[in-house]
Image (cartoon, rainbow, N blue to C red; front, side, top):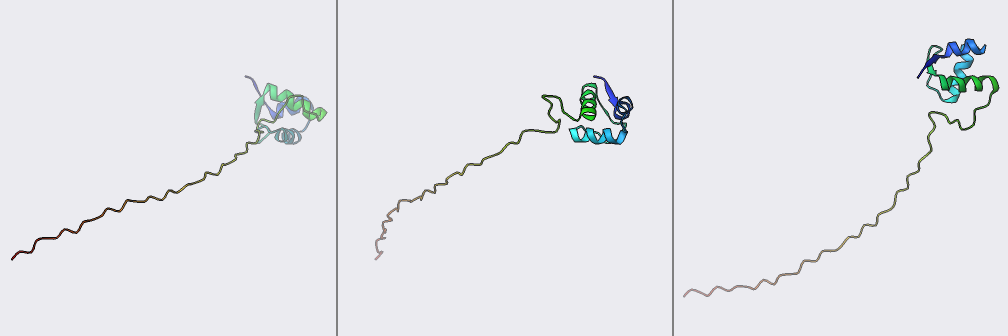
Length: 98
């Protein structure tokens, strides 16, 4: 996969490095400076966006992900009362020693 620098794209498109860098960030590309590189496919998208101001059909920003909502279900806790059967203790009588 070929990569190209932002400053090279700006030179070919006749735009300033700063303008093209801002547009690349608006599209969601991970670029920090004019010497950052992007793929040739992304470069084509960037040039089209910089010149015409419209995104190609079917383009989604690289950082955008669909939101996932988590719904937590309430778990009903049932406490069982544990009843222990009472054990009858027979009183044992010891015979009296005479």
